View 1 (cartoon, helix red, strand yellow):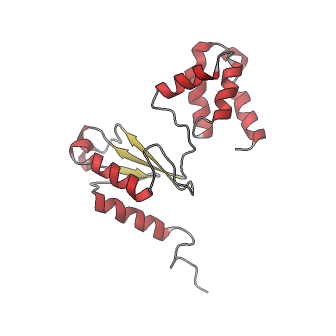
View 2 (cartoon, helix red, strand yellow):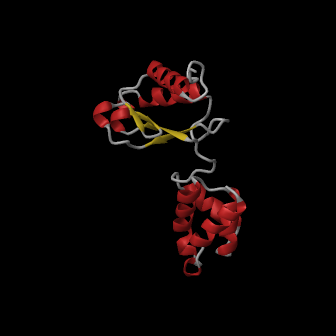
Length: 167
């Protein structure tokens, strides 16, 4: 995000009426909603704004698993580990997805195309185990189905072999 646009969105979040410690979590949530994650620069601005050490802001942010500290991919991948998905093999699906993308949970691929998160519930328990890629729900996943899903997505990507427009 460019500095001008970052300053603009931060000025809308870091308003004078929020200059109290009790607003820290709300401020962090608003920054993540605007930026997609909590950048180091944004957290330093928050620490100055609230007149508290950066380590305190970092400590609060890392305590809650709702916050991410790396930019999300263009297509966030979420693997459900709610009860139904967990019992149906959700952990194996998560591990297969991490292998397929060559990233750790919470990470983003080098090309920033995909990021990987585990979530408590997607709300599709009857289709367990489930993962989402962007807004698309993939039901009844297995490790081989994970590989197939990403092969299909990568093949359909603009510029992929066989997707060039024909004259």
